[in-house]
Image (tube, rainbow, N blue to C red; front, side, top):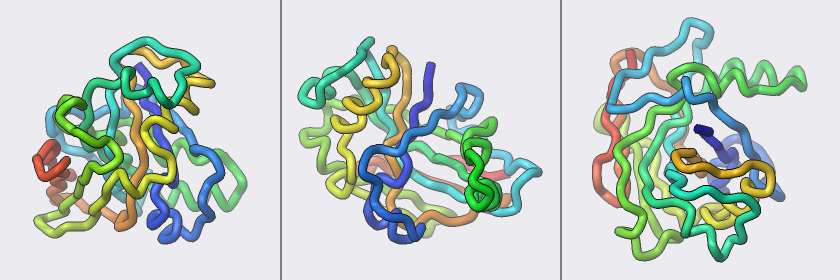
Length: 203
């Protein structure tokens, strides 16, 4: 299975990172060893001193597809949840400044916790789905898919030009503003349309 991620897909997040809006989806992959399920704790690795959370809606692919037109994209995923794209921001900055690929800052083991999935057909409008992240009871991120630069359908159309989508693949669709650092002992709780789908600790 593949974990496909979209970078800079909310205007307010691009602004807080000081980056221009991308003309097309910015795609990177995480390995399956990045996946963290069932509210297991996230262990901060020893190679980073600035580990940051990025909460995102995650799509679960339910059907084999290649070259999918946007108008058919909704047929290819069956469930949504919220996941965290953990980012070693210090590594990312160092690699970016050197002009090197920065995948190592985002694709390490355990860097993709995901919550419990909610059937996609429970959401009447996939362009108006809210989600949020709390850290130690304090709301840090609030997002809505109405603010996406590239919609779910846009992402699936674009990605499926390059990769065959397979059942079980996951797509992290981007994070809104409010990203920030975590420390050991923090409790992260993510909600999708008001329902708690992810609740875990940082160790």
